[in-house]
Length: 60
Image 1 (cartoon, rainbow, N blue to C red):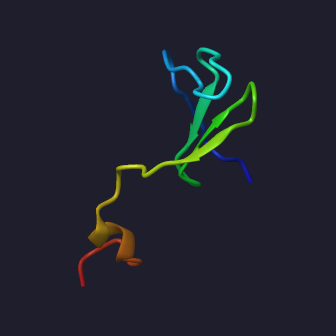
Image 2: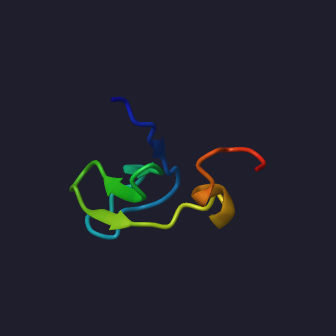
């Protein structure tokens, strides 16, 4: 299974200080440094609570 990850341009890792090595995985809600491997859990804004709970994807 392939996951989409997005590089976070212009940001530095707080662990190693490297620039442009942070990747956001919105599916898992994790930012990871590809230099030192440090990870942080994040809240990804996108779906509202109603959309997340609605498994049908449509009106009732």
